[in-house]
Amino acid sequence: MNNKLPDFVKNKYVYVLILIIFCGLLYLPSTVNRDLHYRDELRYVEIAKEMLETGQWLVPHFGGEIYSDKPPVYFWLLNFFRKIFGDYSTLAMVLPSALSAIIIVLLTYYLGSIILDRRYAFIAGLILATSFLFFGLSIFVRMDMLMIVFITASLLSFYLGYINEGKLKERYYLLVFLFMGLATVVKGPAGFLDPLLTIPGFLLLEGNLAELKKMKPARGFAIFLAVVLLWIIPAVIAGGKEYAYQLLIVQTLGRSVNSFAHDRPFYYYLITFPVTFLPWSLFLISGFIYSLKNRKKLPPEVKFLLAWFWMPFLLFSLISGKLDIYLLPIYPAASLLTGYLFKMVIKKKARQKYLVVPAVLTFLLLMVGGLALPETAEGVAVSSLLRPAVITFLLAGVAGFIALFKKKYILIPYLLVFMIFLFLLNFSLSVVPPLSQGYTKEPIANRIKVLREEENLTNIIAYRYGQPESLAVYTDFYIHDIGSEEQLIAYLKEKERVLVLMGEEDWDKLKGKLPGGTEVIYSSNDYLLVYHE
Image 1 (spheres, helix red, strand yellow):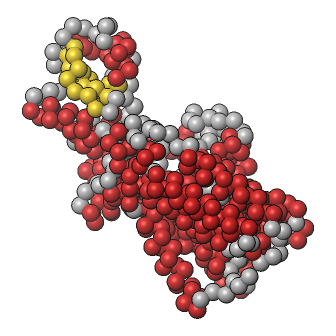
Image 2 (cartoon, rainbow, N blue to C red):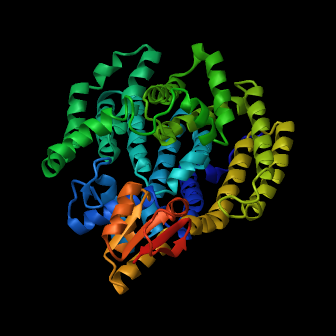
Image 3 (tube, one colour):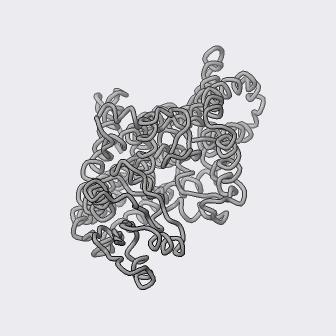
């Protein structure tokens, strides 16, 4: 098989440029024709908006109250992009995530160019960019991607320190702690857990724990603490004792033991990770099998990637609070391990079955999955809108089987990337806009604003909405949730000219219990405005 690369591709900057353009084409279309989602996205934007309006830059606020769930750095970034674009548009608010995702892909490529080679590092970058959960978080308003930039940079710095000597080793090891501190300032303790687990785990596999002394941990942790305390000390002074308690105790220990949020069984990630890492999951599993069978002769770089994947995976499986996004920092390692499998098989250093079996199953899964798409979902004609992607799945799947038959294994990752790229692009351009119209809360929020201004309505509340304060992004005033059914009925009996935001299901349950003179005056996307005279 001729694996010779064209001369222009041998230039590392060509790979970098292709990855940047590829990611831009993949991520940005989904931001153009959609509204901010009414849960996390609107909440984070409202926090940034309140920060700008109040000048409270150290302690985030939501609905006028202190918001201790997250540090302020990400909200600074949202306001920076608001300054550039002039508003809190979806594109402006998603760009921090999309740009962070591109940086993570490039860091993954850089590390891969050291431990694999440029071609397979490039493949690993494409794998990471097209894995489903990584794509999903790249087009969403969340701080996870920004945190993962620094986690990835921290682990890359460690590996560069490990393979170098002298002053270079010392400088890279200091960067490990600096980036850990920055990751922690972005999102909290999750920022330092992955490096603190991965590094000792790798050195244990290597039988080289003495390397920890070369990292000069005392000086390193002094740098880490300096970065973190530069924010925490002023923030605690500004926010007071209650903010300190919520931030340092509740949001840290509360999520670790008997979690108050997202409590899941210990095997949760064993079930969900193979889904969220699609379409590459079966290749990764095959890579694990290959690594297990060849564990006695694995090179140090593969041990490093295995430690990067499995140490956080096991820890977060033991922590009671679980979300799929908690494992995002191990996706670069998963992508590089998958790229390593491709390299070993294509270079005939591993048996063909390690690639052929997952390739056959993945092509079948995509082809059957495309044909099995539902006619409609959330009121959107998914099947017809995604027909171009389904046709691509079928044609590229056939091409994949031909490539496998002719043993052109180098084509397999590129065919899969092509399939997923067209699917996600098709999804972003045709499915995301109507989905947005089905969930957007901008119309009902604007209607509330008009009623308040033109009808002089002041008694405006929500019932079982879930953080209605986030609607202040549109209304410019806070709407608070009334609480229980009894409180709602009492409020309507006590007040005149009341406007209530509630779901259609709640209205169906309550309309016979509410005081007379209560009627629906507006509806949008499963929510109603109920007016009581």
